[in-house]
Image (cartoon, rainbow, N blue to C red):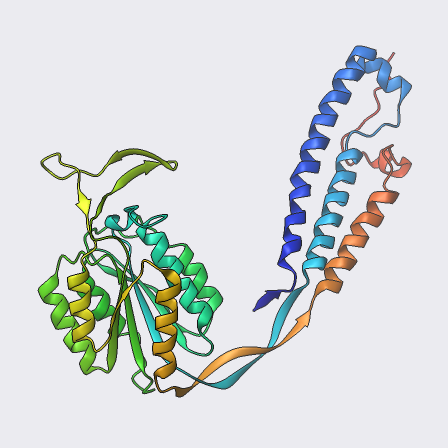
Length: 350
């Protein structure tokens, strides 16, 4: 496993393409200027040892040196020792609604982004709990199995969108059934499922059955509502610009509304609570208190315990490239000239 100490230095890599473009345009300008000055045959006679290849080679050395130096500043570290540690916590699964109704903008910036923000802030409050992520619409899809890797969880979370599942609709029952398979039966941890949705459920009767089955397996089901009861249309965007609004078969604009009754009913049957997601801070604080009240179960987790610095290799490579750049001359080297490695024969014809 690799860690980076100072990720901010990655921004310095932006100078690499800028320098490459500057070199490209400089070469174009030089060739145009030389053509105005004299014919190509005369230029070759005036500068017979001028190498066309070495200027590019020097640029490669320079950019390579700068790249390695930046990587050295970032200081990559490689995990060298994997060990099993004892941790105490709760097993938490987030089932996030990614149906098209989550694009409604009755809560800024839209329901899905609000849901992702809430889950991300909850993850920030966790210490040693294990988490998993499920995406669902007309069907449920596993995003991330139970893990203690919060960084990976946030990465998967941010990649979620309404186009990731081809089957549209909102089947909360499928998400609950899938979540039930996430928990490890050999470790009797407290099991919590958070359903983050606007509550538009197209399989309500099946959902109640799924909740009752989940509670029998020791799973507490909480729901987090995102959206407004008054509802909002579903924008259809292209390149971030609204082109139209979603319409039904009769051509009427679809208004999607937060259904708190369904979400409250699910939470009540699941021995959990319904949480209003309109305020991220309040929702996260309530969930934090709920999790703190739960009994923590000890479990084993594997993690890298030792990381070794690798910056010295990148700095050495960077200085080597810069050293080569200094000592590579723009003119042809005599012994290389004889080998003609770069097809730079002298045209000394009269």
